[in-house]
Amino acid sequence: MTKLLITRPLPQTVLDAAHSIADVEVRETNTPMTERELRAAMWMYDVILPTLGDECSAGMMEGRCKLLANFGVGYNHIDVDAARAAGVAVTNTPGAVTDATADIALMLMLMTCRRAGEGERMVRAGSWQGWHPTQMLGLHMSGKTVGIIGMGRIGQAIAKRCHYGFGMEVVFYNRSAKTVDIPARQTDTLHECMAAADIVVLAIPGGPATRHMIGHAALVAMQPHAHLVNIARGDVMDETALVAALEAGQIAGAGLDVYEHEPTIPEALVALENVVLLPHLGTAALEVRESMGMMAVENVAAFVQGSPLPNSV
Image 1 (tube, rainbow, N blue to C red):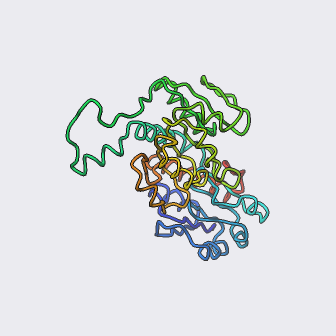
Image 2: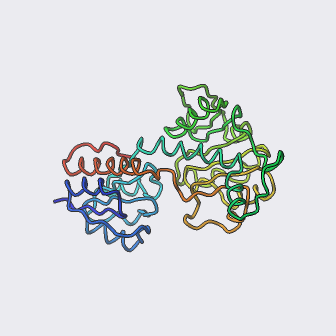
Image 3: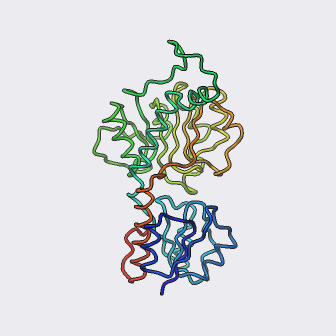
């Protein structure tokens, strides 16, 4: 029977489905696997179901394992080229995460624009003195312009929520030409998109091609009243440049669900009042995690049956 390693505990419905098709071992900890653990696992299992933080890099692809069935749509923690060269297939879970991640983007947009995190801290600290007309004035989001960087499934889901829900104008930057089914304008350059928007949302994949794509030059292009939201991958953002922009007032605020070296967050970023920090909640709903897990299991089932992989990357 196919031996499957699931690298972190998953919802019970997913585990039950996995047990029905394979000889399953679940690693009972929520920390990422170490390099030593991963190297050993590649020799011990036919399939590994890794998650965010399990760094499957080049030089670690030798062994018995022939499928990395990733739990998540993002797979920048897996060296896909090295896997392919070693005869190891890689799959992911697209679609299952789209709406949940787009919802988090809108939540962060509202939180940073309307200073919700700052206000909640004020109330909890007991320092709120009551309502008055000029207290904590933020940016009114309805009718503003959103700039979306990366117009894939998630980017388009965000754009629809912004346009139809908040009457926002949508501009976007994508590395290739993109036709979308909502009113939106594609800009020629990243900086043009950043400059045109009141709120910029990052929805691009992580990896070497996009690492630090949003750095000093991109942030300088933004308007001083504008806000930045990242629900993509932490490494697309140069966090040092972001801290500097926030401290200098080059941009008004930021809302982050992902970080460059998570779970480590720079102290300078934590200290800022004009930033909202979430603990990577993008898909943190039971039904979404179940859907992701079942999609990953479907990829494993296809591998076991010798069928085409539904979500090969």
